[in-house]
Length: 107
Figure 1 (cartoon, rainbow, N blue to C red):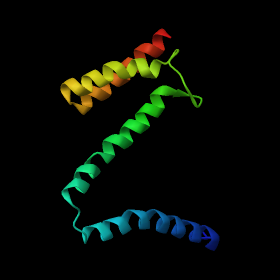
Figure 2 (cartoon, rainbow, N blue to C red):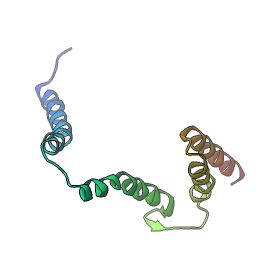
Figure 3 (cartoon, rainbow, N blue to C red):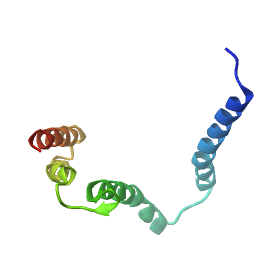
Figure 4 (tube, rainbow, N blue to C red):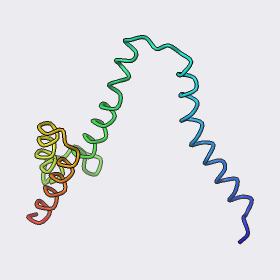
């Protein structure tokens, strides 16, 4: 099997573009002392990103805000309840899958 130099450059370029944004902040921030307020602020970033991703997926349909016939939003309600009450990842995933399965069977 022959390796085309163009393909090899694409693979190496992709590796560099993936590697640098992950390693550079780690190297720079490992040498800095972040104040307590900065660490508290950074602790909220994963929650905010996840909320933005989930909110967009649940509330937007074809780029518009939609609440009609939104089975994803209906299935999210019991899933969120289980997640908050039990804090069990497995239970949350099972309830989410079963909710979607049930709602797709009905609708």
